[in-house]
Length: 332
Figure (spheres, helix red, strand yellow):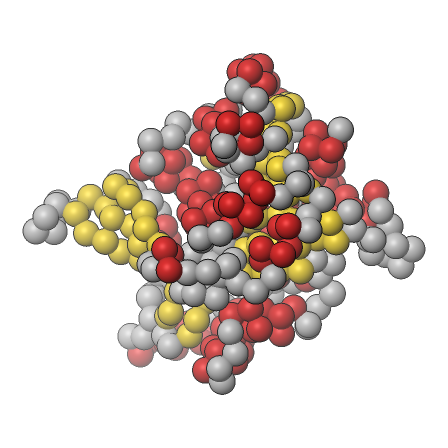
């Protein structure tokens, strides 16, 4: 079984960790691993340059979670962090004082930037970073091009009443409180899928959309030319997991993103946003939470198999159960 996951953010990291556990239980290799192959196509539109370093937040969230070194309390970064270097940078007026980086995390960013400066591509750097730990999955940046997300926001103090800022400033500094008018990824129209991405999708037995932000995590992955077409051309069924439960986001401020593109903060609305594969969309199946069970019949009528199951990812076991439901509805 070869499973490909499109993912970004903490939700994507927790889901992928649960998927790995479910695969170990279903298809054990006798050595604590699994005979299943898990490939993760990771959003890179959250990436940024800061203090001379290249940061890849979504990739690192997945890397740390699968390595077992992530901070479970905060949900991002490394466990056991200190922040002496960030404090020193702030004293020098370098970087963003509201975007704190832990010392261990900075080690990753320094290593990444050093390899990039040496001429390696983001994909080659990603491969090198993954050699440190046994992850039980392969992580692929969706593209080697820089496609950092910019957000056009309302700003009454700006001459035109609006201004554009990097996604991380809107998300982390302003907590998405400034109304977003639109999102764009820099130069995404001339980007190309990273090496291996299209082949991975073509060879998949199952493709999954993690419960990540549909607009700024999954959206940019699908926006890289060739990726959406590769998914629709693949023979594998496509199943998604709702990031919305009972009309509320599971984590973060995805509701502000959905509002900006005219999609309701609703599990069924997000499924319709992705669309049914039978109607030129992506989805063959979709999981909603038990709180949204009433929406499954409308999705079935729209050509998307749907089931209501518990979707709160409290721990590895609950995340594994969700992954198991996703496998079952897609392949059953």
